[in-house]
Length: 233
Image (tube, rainbow, N blue to C red; front, side, top):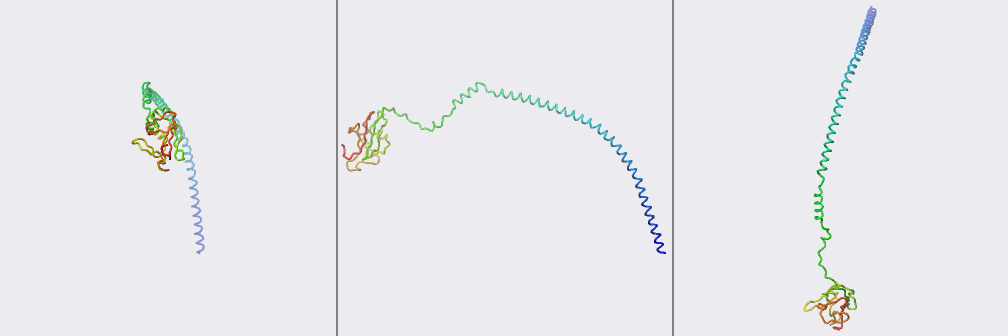
């Protein structure tokens, strides 16, 4: 009995499940046509919307083009006005900055008057004008078995046997009072070789019994300063 009851219950459950599945399938089949109709209606309404948008867009595009052309014309007019003002200002600047002939002449005069002196001339010390030379004289300076100097020198009217000796730039030791007396030349002093030796001078081969500071030298004279060991001979 229990088995028969269980079989009956199982059959009832199977039938109930089959009936429920059938109803679900029927409901889904009923819903599909509605969704298709809604989709068709939606697809039919879209063209209308697009057509309206397509109609409205050209008008907006035309307005935008008109605005852009107006802005372009305005910008071109502004540029033309700016360029004209710039040309007028540049021309006015050129005319205003053009120097007059009188001002240019004054500037050139100032440049000439204000011309700086060369630094080489300024740096050079002022030199006194040397007296005019009257000619040349020959000078020879002989030490003890040694020649100290030999050559021609320029002379003036006041050149003496002593000043001619000074032109050689030799090292001279002398006294000036009561008269010019040369005691040493280039380190060679009187009485160095022997007692009585010393410096003397001659002009044109003749001994001069006069102070070297008083003997004037003439052009063409031959002056000889020499160290003697034989006294005044």
